[in-house]
Image 1: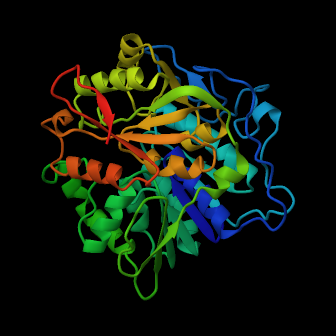
Image 2 (image 1 turned 60 degrees about the vertical axis):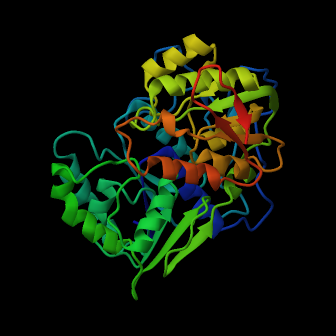
Image 3 (image 1 turned 60 degrees about the horizontal axis):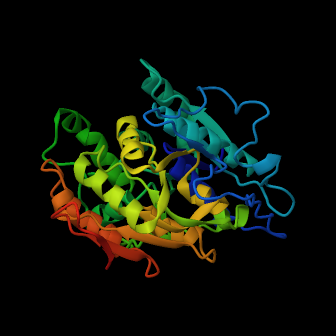
Amino acid sequence: MTGQLAFVESPVQLLNVLEWAHAQAPATGAPADAGGDTAPGGRGAALPGATLAEPGLPVPGPPAGTAPPEGRAHPSRPGGHGPTTGPGRSAPDLTVVVLSPTDPMSRGQLRRMAQLARDEGVTVRWQEARGGRGALARTLRELARPLRSAERVIIGDPFSRYVQLLLTLFGPRHLTVVDDGTATMEFAAQIGRGERLVRWHRKGSLGPRELLLAPVSSLARRRLAPTGNRTVEIFTSLPVEAPEGITVTENAFAWTRTRFGPPLLTGGADLVGTSLVETGVVDAAHYDRVVGELARTHGATRYFAHRRESAEKLHRIAVETGLQVVRPELPLELIARRGPIGRTVVSFPSTVVHTLPLALAGTGVKVAVCEIAPEWLRESASPRAQGFLSGVAGTAAHEVDRLTARAAAPADRLEFG
């Protein structure tokens, strides 16, 4: 199959695999044209690669097994043109296996990212890994041989039970972990301390499913650690302290900056949504109130929804705040780089407060992070939630503004910290 095999389950993972491949094999000739969209777009304008969501209705991606509709400009080719491998760039010796998720938003973004990867000369294999009864056994059977023969394996989510199960089938000589959000910070800390791999927002003791899979997770953790016969690399844009024996390589989003933009800047601000309500960390009422406050304070008109945000919440935000809800069809780093984008982008603690300053370097866009107050957390939230979210905000790049919100009364204002 290939000497390098990547497993991805989200659009961001695939983006960061492309960034890793670009870092391994820089262009030998003149860089490709940035290809950014520079068509005029005022405040609230629709973005290429983004869909305006009708309030209350999710926007699904294309059906499984289909190509983008004929006649529609491909997300990698704004206006019908865009980046390709082209002269001066060698196609990477890389195969990406997409372990397809089930939710429509993730599938749609992944299909668009898969085409971007193909444009770069990457082989992409779409695997319906969760496609009903027998899918798991079929996937393991079909991937066993390429797994055993791969010289290097790249994964995006070391906490994924699916990836952990795959890791039990083989012991790769070289392993690379790319970002799938802020979980990379927790992974580096846990693997460095030799702890059980547990997502930061999980609470309580092991449930029946976790107990059943505990032997798999234990073996996978050992396979994710360096040995005399195995090297481990973390390719990240996050502030990660290198665990003993693991190499940490910076992801500066060079591929994104080379391929897209610079963007046209609009007036006002754009807000970036989060799935902290959906994961049971943040109280919905507090979240809705602060979104409205942020919109009024910064003159925001658009709200970029996280792909896991519920249709009901997005409908409520659109109706109560007047914000235009946008369902991005690509990771936000690409959407922002292509533009148009607001001069200020406000986010809650998430990966984008680390990645957007890199992707938008030199464009004049200001990124701000609104810190999560302890009062916003639900009683069911993990005890580690507040500390982890504070760490995400506190370690953001020095050029990122920090906003604080006092949650005592609805009239409280958000201020620069």
